[in-house]
Image (cartoon, rainbow over all chains, first blue to last red):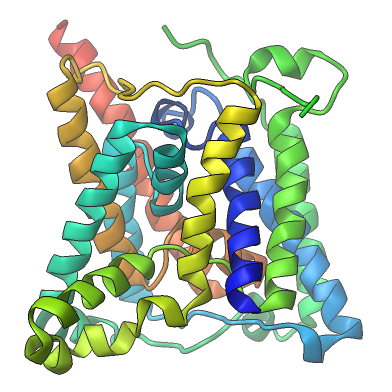
Length: 179
Length: 182
């Protein structure tokens, strides 16, 4: 059943991304230049709603949830984020939005996907030598904010979710008109 | 689709819910449903799995001995691959049902004066986002959206890195242009 669920989730996700114009690299660039914050607010709202929902569900039906926490190897995660950010700023795409953009008929999205495949190839080749040692540095394993703060995940989700909602409410969407 | 907010500033002034808020709530529910159905949404693992499948075809002995090809696993054994296929159709439907025509090549920095320069930026950007995501073990979907939804510490750290250089890079690419007066 997973392939069917996953395809349906992907279709809905691609539709949402297209509708908020997150698949437009120009819109991503405007968000990163902090001229317009609509995509950043979209992402923050998604996470706030998601965390409150899943950790509320986990109070009642924990056995039905498939949580999958990624390990926190601090140096590699941060370095990867910094490299990702440069690519995000230069190209205006992330891996997901480039696929949505291709579905919309954007040729630069196809080029970004090709760049990504070449990036994945180079990564695969250098992994054993360069990356495998890196991911062992400062590896704290699969930890959440609830583990770090020794609080109930539900309480942390409500607090962080509420904090996100307040920030979303306070931030303007259109900061300045560009061009 | 009667709902066709442009996503721009114009929608904000109206009393109706802006597109980012409407679809943000729906995407949050979708992420929770995905964790109920099989697991958190992710995307960038698909790229090395695709590369792995090609290597299995053209250089099976190398693929068999490569640590990362073995680590990421097969393309069609993962739900993620089907999410990516769905994204392609979702983007198509979003544009089609709302009669939108996306530009084939959208200029995003002042320095992209020719299509070739835009394609160069798209290629470099595409390379770095996947390379960076694989170092970190996830991208905007897996680490930021799904990671922070699950309150994973790694998601917050990745997001800090992404927005630090993302904002710096995007602002620099615009500012440098203005400074040179081009």
